Image 1 (cartoon, rainbow, N blue to C red):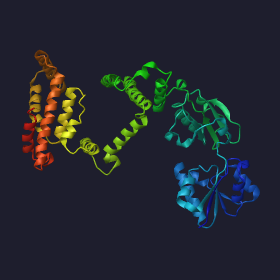
Image 2: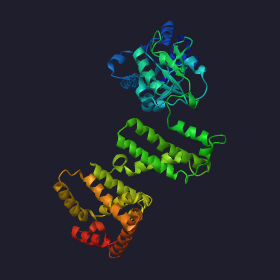
Image 3: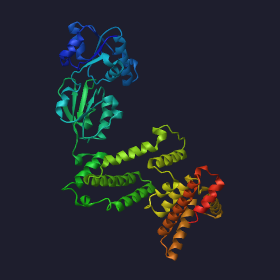
Length: 464
């Protein structure tokens, strides 16, 4: 088995390095990724025999298949002896496949990058991508973007639309064909050049001035918040605290709910932006006080999503939405170190509106096996009564009317319904805790009990 020397030849004849030329004339079998390059003409002048892999383009369905086929062809040739494999750029897709599969038998001689003189047009971090990967571009206007191998007008059009979703359409870009001098043109004219081929490259300079952009991402929001909260920024933003923003966050959440009820997508994304602002502002205030920053926020929620979705990221199985909710509750208990259902009940946020809090607490009781059977019978009677009423509305409307009546009773009794319901929920939790403690002393758990016994325990719990 021979060695494989990968040589970056560049597109033009004069770009071949001295080390590359020596490797090509070393007597090894020479394979070119394509003979549509200056290296092919140089090899002919030097009388060095070579083969190319151009035939693979027609035999493969896409560029990934072509890269695999090219790597296999080189490895197969190396079985008979040393191989010098010429590629225009060592970032060719076939190269990492060869490095992975052939390991220590591979040597790489880097040549000039295919974008050549374009690199001199800007300074700083540049993201380099292949035009054929346009659907998977992950772009940010804070970075220069260099696109290689724009080999057709149709591909240039697709790339242009992808770029214009991030960079302003008037952005001045650079376009280069082979060894020609880079041309300047606005981004929206990327697909209007005279010709395109495998040597065509484009460079889009970074756009870092936030007031000049047409589209913004999450990092732009964080950047704007840093500007507003910095000395010389906005006096109002700088004066805020987590406590002062509590009401703002609540109000924005209710406005999101209104937008959802309206069914207006434009209104919804606008209101969701206001929620995101609250997150970014709280995170920036925390960063300035050395508490945490936005990466702690995103890390926390990503870790939570991974740990709670063990049916996706782990070995658990959940075939239905209900199964997912059960698994979520189980993972949540494990994550929080909760060993009793009482701890689960007490973890329900106390600042929720009392009716929502009551519903969540009762749901947690049902997960322990308590309450659902007790609620089923009166719910059935309600449905029967609802059906008997001429012209009655749906169950939601009927229940809303009953709750409104209860609010009227609270007014006549001069009782705050929020305080009354929260008090009932607190008493339920304490009674639940008392009963669960007695069961633990006797070595019993809710999951071990039959339905009749669970019903008796629930009768005790609800006497609150």
